[in-house]
Image (cartoon, helix red, strand yellow):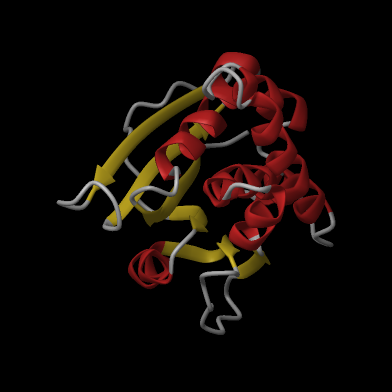
Length: 188
């Protein structure tokens, strides 16, 4: 896989950083590829802008910052507004369409899933991040479902593995239904 630059964004309290950590761990620790993770928070702990820059590659990563986003995962309208201009033409935007209304842009592939609503149906709204990890794995093919499951099992608090995995599976099903080439096949 060539260098793939990813930004995961939302607001504090949604588990944005954990989602990025799990994707990176799935790629690097479980699948044996390279990954870097940088994170940024607003001045408040909860409710302010939050994002993570994640880079995945088969080769060592010499510059750990996103220069042009290949994949944007957005879990809030404000984060979408701020970060969608950074997405490369032909890039992929994954949104929690329970919370984000995208602007029409024919140069981007936008995929939405009702992550927050799905998480509420499961029983915990905070699991929206795991729904988005599932959507990411299913829609992009950049990490395997098996690697993501292992990263989730070994990263979430003890006793929450089952509900986190259930949320992941819901998102993965939604992402797997996307009728398009997987990103790993088309990133240049």
